[in-house]
Image (tube, rainbow, N blue to C red; front, side, top):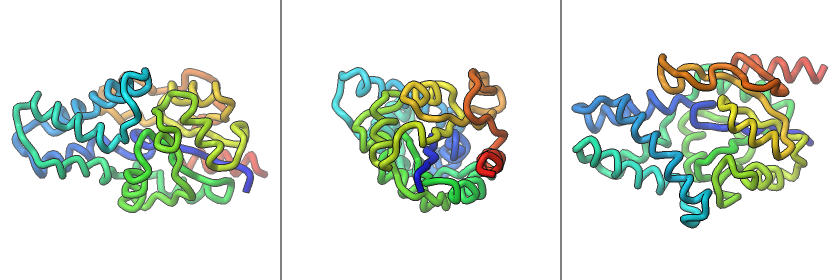
Length: 227
């Protein structure tokens, strides 16, 4: 099959915020668990930016998450075992994701193109029943999105040219970066990724190749295109 769909994962495929808060509640019932989850996620981009900018060599996201956990625990004035870091391996898929991915599979290979490591993506797939054909993304590129090499290395790993691959994301900046590398694009909004007061990525900022309500809608659009 000479076509593929690659996916952002955190926020696009899985509800990281409520899932992490659930695991935090089991260990730290005394804290505001959603605020803790937001703070932990808030360290995500700064940690990766030190690597993207060349200030630090590649470090897998699992290790960055653990470093960030220690930062947030200190900020909240609490302690927790390092095993809480495994919360990022137990993120619930959005309700449309598994059925939508299975509906897309007849039309091309499907794989995560995430900043998560291969190990993290594999465990997350087992937890959530995500039916990937392969795992690509940051670890094979030894860098982090939105650096171009992450998208291009993913194309090479799948043995496909960029124009035959569609990047699927709920984040317009991810699609901007993929489009600049020659990939096709699909926007699927997740308007509550950051809670009910979310202000960003509520709508497409460009005329992407596909704009869908959810993964099932995307699969239907792709099927309609295929005739």
